Every structure is written in C-alpha cells, then in structure tokens.
Length: 261
Length: 289
Ligand SMILES: Nc1ncnc2c1ncn2[C@@H]1O[C@H](COP(=O)(O)OP(=O)(O)OP(=O)(O)O)[C@@H](O)[C@H]1O
Ligand SMILES: [Mg+2]
Image (cartoon, rainbow over all chains, first blue to last red; front, side, top):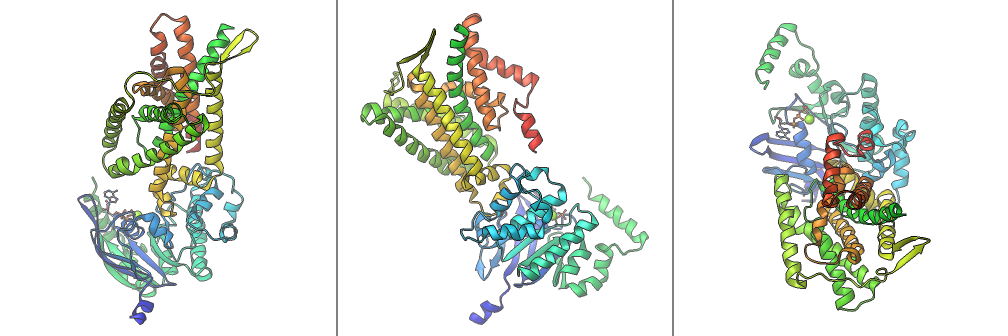
C-alpha cells in the first residue's frame, strides 16, 4: 500500500472524458506525470491539449474518469482549490491581470500562501526574468507579448508549485525568446524541482526538454513514449517537426481544408 | 450666489447618485451582472438604520455601523443564495433575477415598515451653515463629506489591501484569478457585501433629504444614467457621472421649464450615448487594456 503510494506518479489521469456542452473534446485520455519529470503533450490544433490542462486544474469537470494529484482524487475540485494544492497553471495566451502592475501580478500568484518566503520568491522570479524586474511598477497590459508570457510563468512560480502546467509557452515568441523560455523551463525543473506538464506545438522544443511525451489527436492519446524515442518516430517527424515531402503535404492541406467552416 | 447654492445641492444629490452607481459598477466589473435591485438594497439599508436609530433608540453612530454590518451580510447572502446558482446560466437570467429581487424587497419593506415616509433621526440634518450669504444645509455637507470619506476608503482598499487587489484581479481576468488560487466565489460575495454597504451608506446619507419609503429606491434609475455616463466599468467614473447628473438636474429644474429637472438625467444619458457612447472615463480604460 505505502509502496504503491510512493511509486505512484505525482499526477495521474485515468480515462478522462470532457465535454464542451454537447461536444466531446476529450475522449478517454490517460496520462501520468512522475514527480520531478518533464512530460510533454503534443498535438495539432484542436487535439484537446488545452482541454486536458483545464480538466487537470479544475476549470472543466470531466464527465468520466479521474484526476489524481499526489494520490488524492481531485476530479471536480474548483480550480482555486486545485491551485492551493500546489498546481500552477500557465494558461494558453498569457492571461495576466492587465491593469495590475507586474509586481502585483506576481504577488497575486502567491495569494494563497501564508508563509514568509514570498518576498524571497519575488526576487527569485526577478532573477529568472530580469526584464520583469526592470518593469515591476508597470501595468502588465503594457508588457510585450513575450514579457507577458514570462510574467505568467513567474506568477505560477510564486505559488511554489509542485506541478506546473504550461500551455504553449512558446506561442507567438521569437526563436530567441522561445530558446530563452525553454532554458528557463529546464532550469525550473532542475533547480526548483518543479514537475512539469508541457503542452506545445513546438515539438522540437518540447521533446528536447521532456523526459516523456504524449501525442494527442482528436481528443485521444495516439502515441506515447520517451521523448528520445518520440523524436525518432517517423510520424512525429512528419507532422510536428516538419520533415515531410512536399507532395504528401499538399494532400494534407487539402484534407485539413475540408474541415474549414 | 444662487448658482453656487444650486451647485452645492446638485453636488450633494450627485454624490448619492454616484454612490448608488458605484455599487452597481462594483458588481458589474467583478461579476458582469447588473444589479437592478441596487436602489432597493439602498432602501433596505435606510430602513434598517431607521429601525436601529429611531425604533430601537440606538445612538446614530452605533445604528449606522450596525446597518453596515447587517447590509454586508445581506449582500454576501444575496450573492451566495441568489446569484451563485445563476453561474453558467445566460446573463439574462441573472438580470431578471435582480429585477425580481427589487420587487420582493419593496414588498418586504412595505409589509415591515409600511408605505408612508419615515424620517431618519440623524445628527447631521435640519441645521444650516452660513458662509456670508451662502446657506448650506448640514445634510448636504454630510453627504459630500460621507461620500468623500467612503471613496477615500475604497481607494485605499483597492490600492493596498491584498483582498482589494485580488478583487481587481478577479474582475480583470476571472479564469487567471482561479488559476492563481484566489477564491473567486468568496471574492464575489465580498463584492456584493461591499456594494450593499455602499448602497446602505447612500441610503443613510440621503434619508434626511428624501425621506425613507419603499419606493425611494427608484432614484437608482438616475444612478444607472450616472454609471453609463461614467463609462459603466470605472469606479471614479461612477462618482463623476453621479455628480454631473446631480448638478445638471438641479440647474435644469431651476432654469428650464417644469419637467426638465426630472428628465435631465436621461437627456444627459442620450447625449452621452450619441456623442461618446463609451463614457467619459473610457479613454483611460482603453489605454489600460
Ligand atoms: N469553449 C469551447 N467551446 C466549445 N468547444 C471548444 C471550446 N474550446 C475548445 N473546444 C473544442 O474542443 C476541442 C479541443 O480544443 P483544445 O482547445 O483543447 O485544443 P488544443 O489542442 O489546445 O488546440 P490548440 O493547439 O489550437 O490550442 C476542439 O475541437 C475545439 O473545437
Ligand atoms: Mg490549446
């Protein structure tokens, strides 16, 4: 019993199904995130990656299946309660508080914490993101997209999370900023011991960072393996790393087109 | 001199509109619900104060504080019992609910306190201060001072209190507020409590001027105009909008043909909607987004 608990992953999804009204977005997804690791979730637009993260953090309730964090069943919990458990969520599209200053945003990240370490953690975040330190008194809405992304990551860090959910942190960032944020993600994992569940379109970046990866398609997990082996898998090369012959690609485009509305 | 006189009574009336508008905007900003019963909440606060001070004979200060406390609880309960189950329903449902709430509160007040007007015993009514030729009713001074103190307090609360900042955060980005662990539902209950306390303050301040009866909440219609003039989403805008409506109303009833006084709020509203539909304080907001 105890042995099982100690070997159980930090986060465990069992066969979850999540709906948007009548639309079934997640059709039975199971995935594990072992403590201390970086796990990547890849998939095309609309595959259901964001919905999986929302289901974990409680923004959406799964109709079926269970979400367990640290051995505790948290399915159906309100998102603020899940956050207070130590799950930091960096949502898709850098959802900062636009009228609050950078520092207020960061302090809000520590809202549920009562300990005295908040001040130190502020400095820690500023250490990771010097460009935020220069702008502590600036309203977050005035930051550039990349800076807002860093603020969203920093804000989640202020929770001192055991697990951090990152939804496309590289979205809309220049290759250099993408590289920077990848480096910081790696450091958070190594230096702060944060376990990471990383959703990415940028498969190369994600698989370089991750220990293990899942590939989603139409609300299902269609492939899972160690990151190293996924990098070699031909399908991944074709779909996500952009190594494919032109002719077939054209056909893909046409197929995708039929789903346009 | 007459102009100054009108200006002062207009400002004090405008403060009352502004306070009701402030309560509306507080709730709207946080929860995106318009509380059509805001005027009735104010009326309830005034009747409570009347009960504590006139009926039970408590000192005014004690009665006022007790009113604030009870109204805070009432506001939080309204959120918990009425509004929270509306989550996920179409916004229209919540609006209808608040309109219904207004009817219910008027009926309750009529049954509990009767429909005839009551006068709240206050330490600040019925006297005048003279500044040379200028005669100012003490109740007018009390309204302006009370509003200024309340606004100052709210400013400090939103600027420096952790909960105040969390409240702003929840109204700026609800999902992100959930994700950082802010208990958003509890924060919304707090917003309703605050809003009810602001309304009760307005009710107590206006009581010496307008008397207390179950229909006194209808002045909230002018507060709607004030809130829209102010941009419906800006707290300072609500107060400024209230002041504009109050002052124009006073001047219109003095210098324009009969009828213009009471309709001036809507005329301002129409002019605003045509000339500057986003409200006076919108530039500030737009810049901030
Ligand atoms: N608010 C919503 N209402 C209805 N359907 C939705 C909603 N959000 C997402 N969906 C649907 O759910 C499915 C999964 O969406 P999701 O956002 O999880 O995809 P994703 O993998 O994160 O895509 P992307 O890479 O573009 O962010 C899609 O088919 C989408 O159309
Ligand atoms: Mg997504």
